Structures are given as structure tokens and as C-alpha cells.
Length: 151
Image (cartoon, rainbow, N blue to C red; front, side):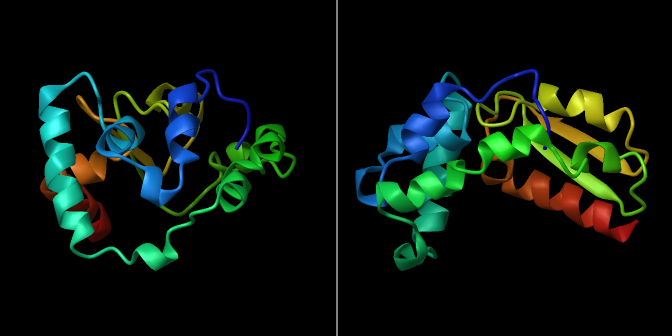
């Protein structure tokens, strides 16, 4: 919520707005991984294999009209009328934020103004990763999450 210093890169919306049947491997890499990294691309292949064995594609939005609804509220989110961003400073609930160092949807740099004022927030940035660091580093991400949940 609120205005971000680093905007969403156009490549994210271009890939995200495609119907599932038109979504290819390169789109998947663009959306959730670091396309310039061989390690990230290899992780994308492994992730796709894991996910494709379990995903129910009937629940994945297909039409451009439905997909547009995911992006429709963005202008109202920027306004942050209800002051969600400021609420982090008084939040009592522990928060774990995990981001890739090249998330083209929501740059990790956009968290800096928030985490400095959020006493219950822990922030992890995983290297060579995009919007889906948990897909690229499933064991490491689950380890961080499990450790966080213990405390």
C-alpha cells in the first residue's frame, strides 16, 4: 500500500496478463525468477515440474477480463487512504518479508521505508531471484519460515 519508489516493471504485467494456455516458460521465468541467471532459470525448470504435478489449472484465471481485475485496484492501493503503510509502525504481530533481489513486481527496495519503522518485521532478500524466491529456494525459504514461526 502507498506509493513505491521503484515501479513495477512492464515485463511483469505483460507476462501476467496472458492466459494460462499462452503462458510459456519464458513468461514463468520473467514473472517469478531472474531471467539473466542460469541458476535461477534452472530453478524455474525444477519449480515448474513440482508445481505442474499439483496445480489445478481450472482455478487459474484465463480470460484477459479476469486477469485485468487483479491489476484494477492498483491506483487505489497507491493512495493508501486507510494508512496501511503507517500501520506497520504500531503492528504487534510479527511479520516475515521474503523477497528476491530482482522482483520486477515489487522491488525489495520498496520495503526500506517501511521496515525501518516496523518493529516486528523481519526482512530477507534472496539472491539471484525474482518475485518467487520461495519457488527458487523452496528448502531455504521453508527453513526461514519454520524458524520464524517458532519465535
